[in-house]
Image (cartoon, rainbow, N blue to C red; front, side, top):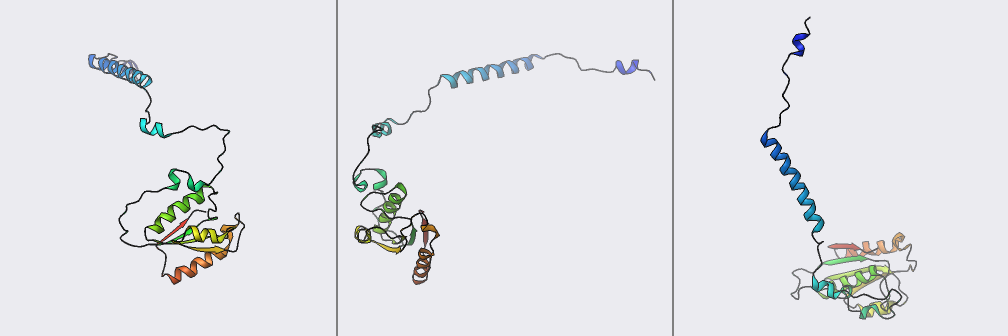
Amino acid sequence: MDFSLISKQWKPKKTFGFWSCIGKFLLVILIFYSSLLLSFSSPPQCRESAAVDIETTNANTTYVGNLLKLESSWNALSFSSEPCPKSLKIALFVKKWPAKGNAGGLERHAQTLHRVLAQRGHQVHVFTSLPSDPEEALASDKSMHFHFTNSTDLVKFSDKLEAWSEFQNMNRRLNGFDIIHSES
């Protein structure tokens, strides 16, 4: 076999065309200037009006008082003043109902949201543990229906069948809830 023919076969030429060089050059320039542009541009800023609303507090300051009287987003929700087209039956499960304005964010959120929903004409049923003063809860939120369990053990509230049993009874009596919400 003659190997001299194999070595003489066609081999591609290593030439760089004009357009190939220009394309590579433009790509390098584009990447370079893009990175420069990104590094020197300022990061997005928040709106000036939003920044003015933010207040700084001393880390050593502790608030003492009624959380219900604080002017903040969790104490006020804005809904349309027009009546709801349909009254919904809402079941809410929450470990603890706020008493005297001292509760965590979960309970405050549940109270604020569901109080407004009840005021808008929805039928809100709250399934929760027995507070230290049930009369206070009933008096403060007259537009809602409370179903207290005998449990005061907040850690094990979700394990109690009493709230679930009461829910099932009300669910049958009302021909079903439209919404079931858990904050626990």
